[in-house]
Length: 422
Image (cartoon, rainbow, N blue to C red; front, side):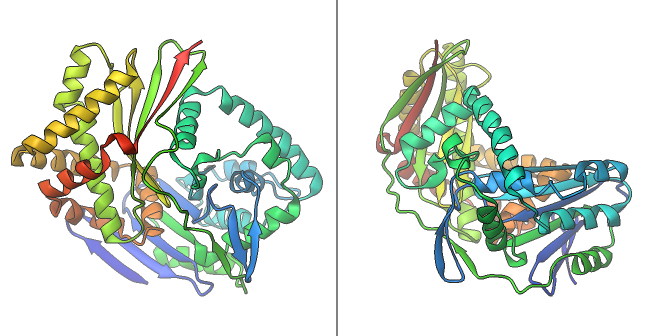
């Protein structure tokens, strides 16, 4: 087992790859009673096109989320009750490019880890249980349609992206989930829940050798099919349309503004671009930025305003959102301010302050087990060691930010999604 110590963060991480191909990591936190286990797959809602053993396949939208629900359903067992009996709390989520199952406990760690690995790796589907789940997820889809935050984002994605499946809802549609069968679920589980496509991350005061032994004894040994998801989507940097407007039962107009960015890819260079985008968002939309203060004083935004860099496999955008009676005016002000920054530059003091602020947020997030495990997993699939992030910030220059803003914050890459009150 490989042990790595990160002196800048005072973190120790143990890494190992099981004989079946599963990579795992233990973030060692001696003295802590809490233990957290994340078992994740590099598979999300966008991975509907794939090849398995050389044969092309296409799954309906929503299968990844459907699988997440159904894996808790083991015949003759109540997984949630079993975890509760161990004093543990399980949960799961499906994203656009990753599905995660996680368990928090303070005791019975070996039993909790074994149970987590068992239910995720031993699927059981019947026609009756799939039909029942279709009704449950159908209700979830209907509820989601009434969520303004979901609606405004999904409208924005549809208006921005031509071919990337980020424009498809994570949950799918009522029509797409009606096409899901046990056979489709079994094939997608075989294709994407193979150990080499997954990652196990554990955080707490646990014995890494014991954790590896439990995983080795519990998980299947193979052989596993050769599956290749579609990871390339032809997408230029212009938007399908410049704006989209919807109406809902909201108190005042809501908006989300997106600027299309080049997909990041993987590795250090990709993460460096991500952090540059984060700093650009801080410069343009942060609470201490000149633009934020001006718009706030003018009453065009309120404390809901903020922004950041959104990254999904094959997709990236600089985004700002909030409530405003003048979304178009806010968009124009952002474009004008970005042009002014390109003319005046960024002072060394301002750049240092932003880098320290961004670094501070990430350092503070290391206190959160959930945040640390999630980021460790997400960056693992991006071929980046998350615990080396301090060096990335140190190397970012003023010119990096100016180049990013000049390339990205332009009218041709911009799309505005608005929800107006009925």
